[in-house]
Length: 84
Image 1 (cartoon, rainbow, N blue to C red):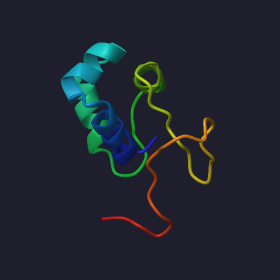
Image 2: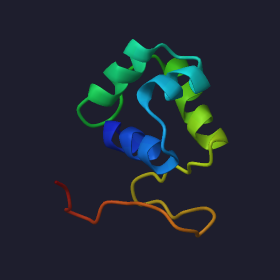
Image 3: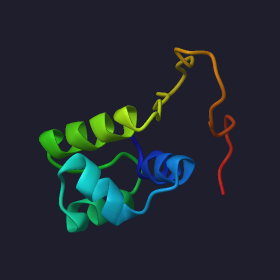
């Protein structure tokens, strides 16, 4: 998961960092560090697993590079070569 995916996932379900920390059982400073990472989220695997599980439970499907959406529903993905 990239930091941008993490921020976008929060935006999709309308929660702030503090709420994600509470839902995942990970500290707020850890969430802040994860989202400040350049590229892929850096952190302890256990913390990352908890965040991914919390986002999944909230209804977010994280789509990996070159992966299809499992449900085939709506989603968000950057275009190839895209970016800000």
